[in-house]
Figure 1 (cartoon, rainbow, N blue to C red):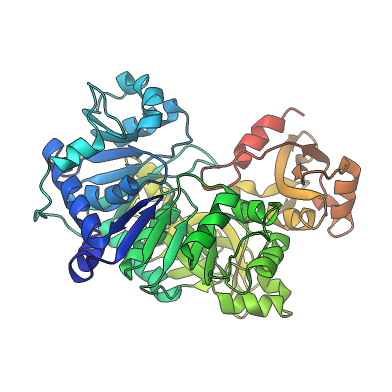
Figure 2: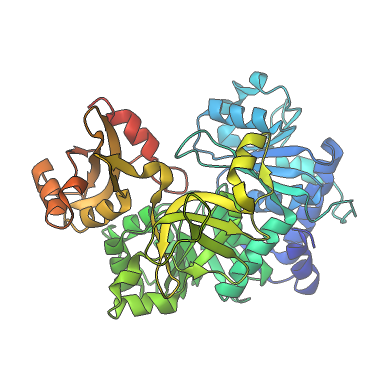
Length: 509
């Protein structure tokens, strides 16, 4: 089974069913299949089997076409974050040795200055108006055949090449095969009860691995609703306009919705499944989310290298949490039906309930390896399991609890401080909108605990008040020694905090 088979099934069986809505554009499965076929044939005419095809664009229908069409040409789609610096685009394209670049018109001028530094690029295709030098996407695919071509493509061929966000270091290219992506989609279809009537509003950027919601929705014949970039009020408007049943976002996005002055203005009652992920959800934000949206919230744990989620914390367990079992509010759930997940110590021995160790994963959706990075691949697969780099513990019932990223754990005076534990306390302060806890170098203690705070609009707080809030709840060595107030947190395109930038910014303070 190949990745584009997801569209072929419905394109042949239910061609009139809606597959994608973007603004005033409505794509049926029949139309989407035709355009996927055209793109696959066009790409095959420009490159060779195994080539990488880069894409830089916001959430547009052409992006979804590329999701399926590029792998169906026997090539790999290299998803690039549109918010990166052009020099970072050039680095990734060089590392992936991309031969073709599909780019949204608004980003073309930024990229043009870097093209001379990417000698592997032979063809640039513009989503929007083409130029005398670079043809438009529409011109390229309209001249290609709409009839599917049978090609020698294997399930274990690379379909996507997605570079890690680099929140803890330099990005690595995760190679995901047709099999990886399909198993990740099937895992979600089974666990998240996808149905043909699903209308999924895509709040995450399609360049992020959370775009796997697309193939999970299409697997069951549902519709994806797109808008170019996330904005909280537009999200609420789209839910009301289209009768959205499903959506998903990062915790920071949910926080932005809940704090929006018009949060109670819109009818959000059609929502039946709201997925959050990509970062830890503060318990206080989660409580408020359930209060506003109802018992429709669920979560998962996954990462780029896994093609989707491997842990699920379903709606039923969220209901348990708000009905008295509040410790579950900070859980990320249990292993999904097609995933093997364990918490182990440094010797690969499985930890007992309550003990902190690293999450490791094994299964058909785990990446093939890192592109052009044998050393990173070998290290990631020590002992035959994929090492996530996330510290966690599990309880007697089997629920997993993320404690920290291994690189975000703070070692101060010989004591381990897990940043998330301190952040959970900070979020209980009424003036705190966002909080990040980091370790800063100290000649005596090794590291000191520091808190970086974004205050709610119109609210105020002092450093002493923030420190006191933690001191009243946690051991003395866990309280911040310094508090920094900033206007905005540095984040990835998916809304994940980039603590590395905060550590660099305040290391000399």
